Image 1: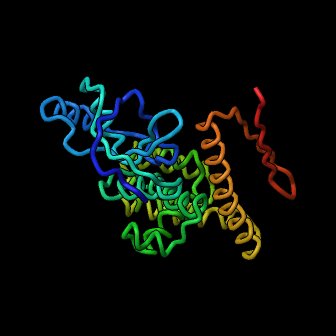
Image 2: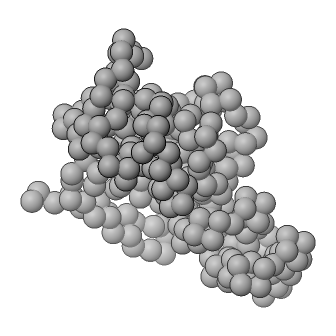
Length: 265
């Protein structure tokens, strides 16, 4: 990794999002408060960028750049770094964890992407991000929830403790219904645990399958959810690179089929 020797001012119009940035949302109120501070004091801490064909990509400082733009600035102080994709993704993740900016789903996807796409081993993540093996495993387990459930967890700011209870219910519709109850009925954690136990008991009673067969079905669903998440991320990266791509999914009796279509025009 190489850093430039000095801070330079870079025009905001030449700065583009980092395709490996896992943070998707910024709290509007906090963003505008930062913009007001920048109007008075300027951007006190330089952002970190790397060069690209079209200009610069953000590694650290996306929130500051957005706030600076809102404040009316046309350029920001920056340090230019020469790094590859894996280091870029890792630095972005480090910044977000240190600033506690990520939702539980974003953090889970961040760990998974670093290991799956960039082949960074878990022990290296533990050292570089200063996180425990248990924390990484617990977050990644949340990716066994469907995309619809994860979206609703983020949308309603559901805590990790509540989200982990949902993992015990292997039915997307029931999970979504439970989230509605958590939000609308202000379901306490103890009541949630009781409800989940009742749902599991009802599912076992209503599904006269052998225990071994039930475990196989659950295991496949969990693995398929992770596989699909990987493919979705691949499509997202290809689209950000400018490709016109579409993924089609087909459920068959003995397998699940995924077809990628990359259009020439």
